Image 1 (tube, rainbow, N blue to C red):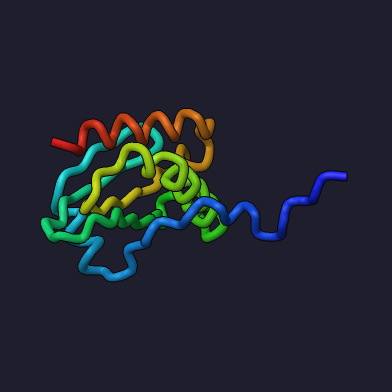
Image 2 (cartoon, rainbow, N blue to C red):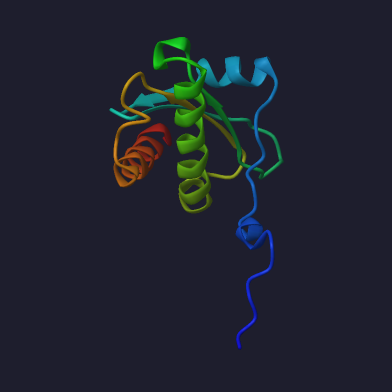
Length: 124
């Protein structure tokens, strides 16, 4: 009988470092940005020697109540986890902003393609 997967096997994919300080979010908001129907992406080159890709997530109250905002952010986190490893540039900070009514409703594959397109546009 084959071995059952271990508990926590889904954690095989590493988590991306997350932006937590307001100044990092503000710095990204003043840098390059591109909007798609499902995601608004803000990105900036930190200009330091650290090759780490950092990401932040935000949804305003326009997205809905706390349940709707949390659902939108969960979807943004998963899209970032699946997409940024292949398409992000080292040394960049990215902020994914949820859109009212669409981030939680669009098909997941559409959100992934929106993020890939936004990343191509944000990078010079």
